[in-house]
Length: 315
Image 1: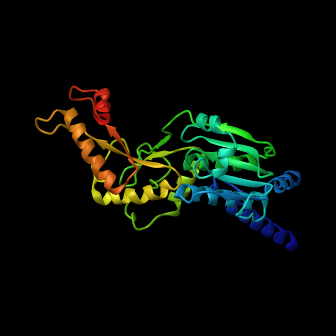
Image 2 (image 1 turned 30 degrees about the vertical axis):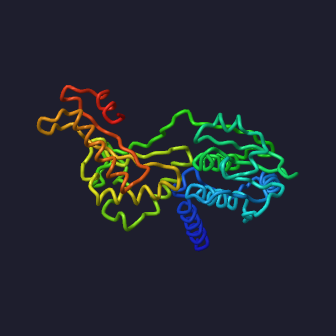
């Protein structure tokens, strides 16, 4: 009986360790060692290391991703190579990779636009390599995530010819989060944005959030609820937004805020007010959070509709 109790305790202890190890936080970005020996050995034969051209924040994110992904999936440390070898993965934009000029990829690069990518097997300097490239740093990052998905799903990578371009220019997540961290129609706890600790403290979850979004091609996030609190447009809060934007920028993600301009101000026509506040806010935002955007909420109460509001912002 005593032996049975010991076995039960050991079994439950082992189960608890297993459950604790997998909590879902890694989402689909699990780079666990491939368990199929045949596929693992094939990948190890085909991939010898990687070369990353460029040093922008987005390219550095791509470099970290390919390094972590290959190390985890292949179960060994692959080198950051200094020169091309058989099995090298060559990563970089069309502008940062001089060797591309000799590969006759002009038509393909034209097809993918600004944020698409190419993953292709090529012979360069008598070496068989895998090329991941695009016209922008974000495109390269998306290509790296796609290549790692091929390995995760055990796809053949010996002869690649992938050309991918997004159909939608702005691919946004639209948060309905309030500044007090409540979420409109939210049923999964408080907002991820802890405004009280920003900008001094950057939660690791902000980077993880950006990384997960970039892995599926999201390139923008609207931080605030459509029923906006104008406090977010004050300088102290814009500095908090800027801290988030810095984290997200490394993954090709722009930050958007919501502003409400529906209330009239004296004799000023609401459309003129909307336009004036848009310009003032854009100037302030550019000073603190360069590269961010604005989503305007315009209530058609004063004789003007949403089309008028859009025209005011765009003009």
